[in-house]
Length: 151
Image 1 (cartoon, rainbow, N blue to C red):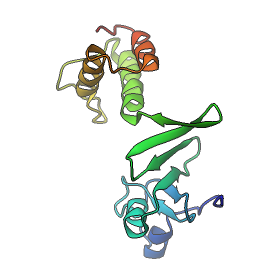
Image 2: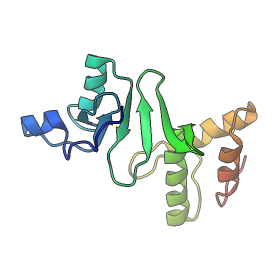
Image 3: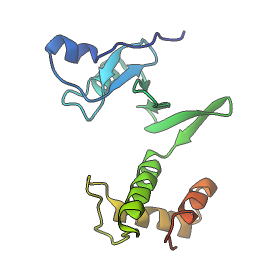
């Protein structure tokens, strides 16, 4: 049974008068809770309390879901759902911003972006995956398209 559109705020944060960062909706019962970047982490708490496995983001422009049981993210693709590597996506965005700002990609192991993303770890992770033959073809294409990317 499909759930409704979700509440305009985290239900528990609203009752507490507490701020929240992002809204997440349980796809089993429709409960709206706050994300793990919020102080109270009500979406995760809802899963822990109920065992309901999947939530989706209610933020404008977001099109993803998270399964607490398998710890995977999903997006709709080609009439179904595909597993999404959120770390890859976040790193690709961070790498593009880094290149646009400084003209180069800092791949040193300790490199982090101004907002704290571990860019050096991200580069090392996907280079190692490529060396082991575990890199998804679309990830290889995206990395090859980064100006200055080297294997």
